[in-house]
Image (cartoon, rainbow, N blue to C red; front, side, top):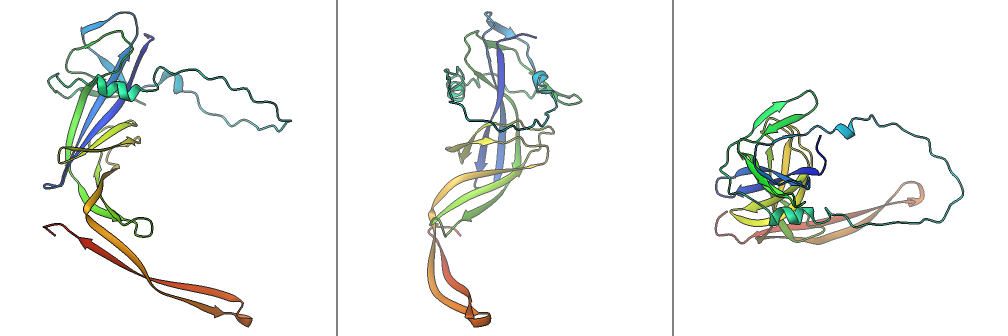
Length: 239
């Protein structure tokens, strides 16, 4: 094993409002500080975690007299790791999907192209795979909390292997919308996306009635009823 090497996953989700298709691009972000630049090398990455194979055990909790808490902090070199990834993004390599091998408890990806990664402890981004699927687009609103209406969509992980947790950028019709943390997603499991607030649609919630009902022995129990009128306004040229 070689120390000084790290990698993580990130994703780009692109929604098309006309075709209602969603493409998901999977990327690998790699950095290394081995002291030797990697120039035009073949690379294989694995999801195996040798240090995470210990079965967790529950330990007893003991109560004792409180002691003063002393906290030591130190700067983390990966505090802005994701920001570095975006600055170092590299899509210039011709895209070919990697060879994927399923092990007993992990997956191994063999990159189909050679890469160059300097020993500068900065992340470099390479695309692994991409899938385009038909998505289910729908609007979501919470009138009690907001008059805004949000366009959302669901799709599925059809890569054939689990998608590891990672930062995900969301685009709609080519425009950047937001960033969120994609949780670990198993094959065929749903992926939920939010494409942001739709400025052309508005929802209003208005209380139209409130009355109190007394019941039980001696009218000791009280039930309060509320009635609301919810109005949805569509300002789009198309329905």
